[in-house]
Amino acid sequence: MMLRRYLVPVGRIGLASQVQLQSSTSARTRTYTTALRHNFQWRNLILNTGIRSLSSEPKQTVKITFADAEGDTETVDANVGDSILDVAFDHDIEIEGACGGEMACSTCHVILDQKTFDSLPEPEEEEEDMLDLALGLTNTSRLGCQVKVTEDMDGITIQLPAETANMQ
Image (cartoon, rainbow, N blue to C red):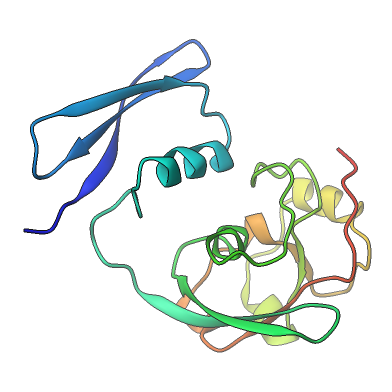
């Protein structure tokens, strides 16, 4: 039998979230009460408890290549529906994402090809404001935390800028 563990939200205490870690092979649960206000805090809790995903269902994946300023590339499997920032974090790609995906900085700035950029919804005003702080801005720049992976992105290359600046 395959062991499946997952987090179940059970309530809030002020700004803190309360979740339970449950196992499919045991009636035992473990409850965590913590201030999980940012995606990276959830990710750390998941990694520290050995959970690979909040869902036990397999996800569809596409191949995405990340290219850095020196020309080095890394091709990874990206879950459809995940943000580009989450994909980069999951595969240890060198992207800062200082705010953890809360759109409060520009350190997850990525440069897309024109076709991919054109296929995306228009950026919200808040994203455009954050992009104004990004170094190396181009006509096809977006924040990685705001771009969700789609099936149409299979085989794309995402260019990482030469440098970033955390202006939060």
